[in-house]
Image 1 (tube, rainbow, N blue to C red):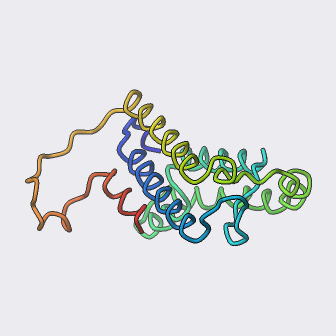
Image 2 (cartoon, rainbow, N blue to C red):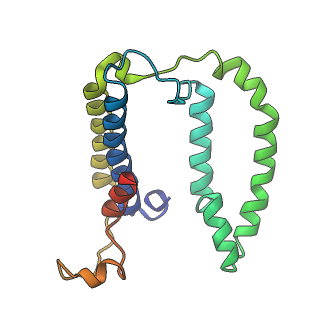
Length: 180
């Protein structure tokens, strides 16, 4: 949201860092559990590559940008006394009703018959990892070209007391979330 509204790339870079570190972690975990990636593991729960799933994800993202955040963010803002949050939360109800009403139809017509895309079965773990990291790096390059970084106050390089008191850089927080 900050990238689209404020042109601030920091939060988006944090998300990309979390995805990159998490992608590496998943590649290691799957590689250890299933050395040959010929088939999709039963426990992977990979969603089919359906246009309905892609459009749903895009509409969810656009809705978050327009609403100024996700539903859980508006729940805690509601507790802070935000006057916008009740409107946003009530506005979600028709969308939920519509989605739940139409889900079975779209699932049967599009999602259930869509192919499962498991990149490691085609490219191996190293190839899939390389492709995903290249895509994330490409998005990071776009962020650096199109966004701006709000200047941060200078800190001591090894100020250990400030680690728990001051905000971390977004990319470092994202990488920590990816590790988790």
